[in-house]
Image 1 (cartoon, helix red, strand yellow):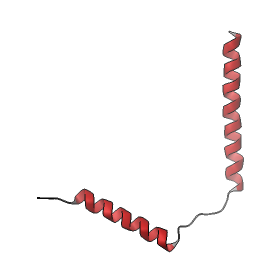
Image 2 (cartoon, one colour; image 1 turned 120 degrees about the vertical axis):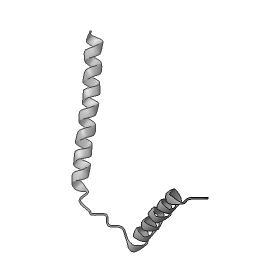
Image 3 (cartoon, rainbow, N blue to C red; image 1 turned 30 degrees about the vertical axis):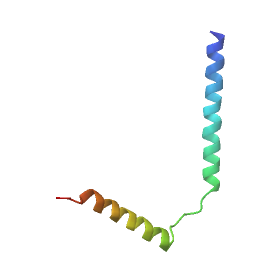
Length: 59
């Protein structure tokens, strides 16, 4: 029984540490990432190509 308590404490501690680390790392990073013109054009072209390949009918 003591082994289960130990494992639960270790697992809970790791979850708590990971949650706190993510919270504080996201809090520091408030910079908005906006895609530049090239990335936006590339993404739009990729989406259009994907749409075209899905909707293409080869008869």
